[in-house]
Length: 139
Image 1: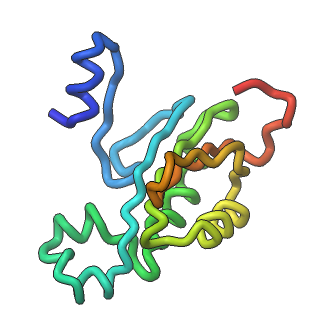
Image 2 (image 1 turned 30 degrees about the vertical axis):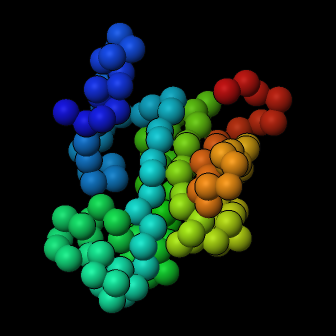
């Protein structure tokens, strides 16, 4: 059981979780999609010994410059997010700069609604919605 499932169970929440390689096992649209992006540059991860096997590569490598998986996610998410839905994109800025992420977002079909940070932790959650969504619409 995933830790998110354990947490939901302990809070007596009824949430359905999907485990998939991006949207490979997904066939419907959602109002909320949360993604904690793998962030390591593949070559750096190999050099540091972090990417020791295929599973660690899938879990932690973001491909070239650490951004390839985020690019794929943002491209594919268009088909799986409802028109009024939001994406929650978690990124560790220790490995990928804020400027890089904002550039990826601006070149996608999404717009930034909010960037959430916590204290001195070098990470952020980007709250995104589809670009065609009107500003006055509620989430």
